[in-house]
Image 1 (cartoon, one colour):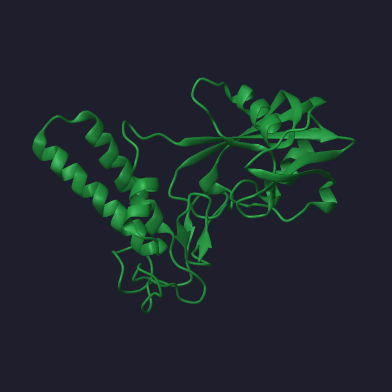
Image 2: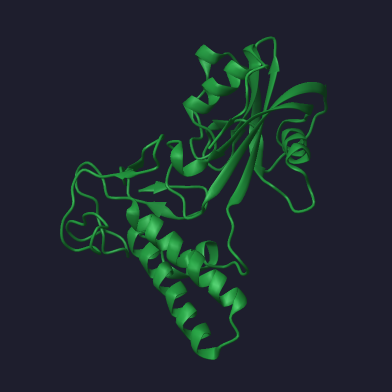
Length: 261
């Protein structure tokens, strides 16, 4: 299985999402899953009851579960009818069960991470800072997986996207930066990241370095500057090779128009 940062595991090779259309792809389809939801073959080793055939699984399971969860959460946020509350609660439990089975993760874990929010559901926002020195980009090594990423993280309530980029860069690397250019606003599902139970927008800023202090971070263990042709292993839940190429292109030509989905 592949473990994404949300703490939910997914079968290795569990499908992909086309970077241009967002369509899920699969090697095969068959019985044992909801109509149109792809293929399941044989018993799984975990609690899921689903295993992937050679070539991967159809990731539409994940999208169905996310959509059902969003409908249920929004319904529970606005209805006062006791019968509708019961129905929406059942829908939420269905989404938890679907995600648990596909991801081979116990329902309580999924329920806390995947269905633990309230109110109208909207995408989460991840903000990344691309800061350069002498043509090399600032990167941090993530403690959760030992791989490398641009400094960044989830947006905080009360902070603008620009302020989040500067805050995350300082907290994770000790470098004080000033965001000077919006590079991109991307929909995570279209750009080759590992599967996630959340719908996520990713915002990238080109930043100038304005200072440095020694700081310690529980999220990162190392900091470095890397050339485009000498990048370290990437934490692809956070940043992909194509996105790294993108920030280098914007550093070379800051006049480029921002990219967006």
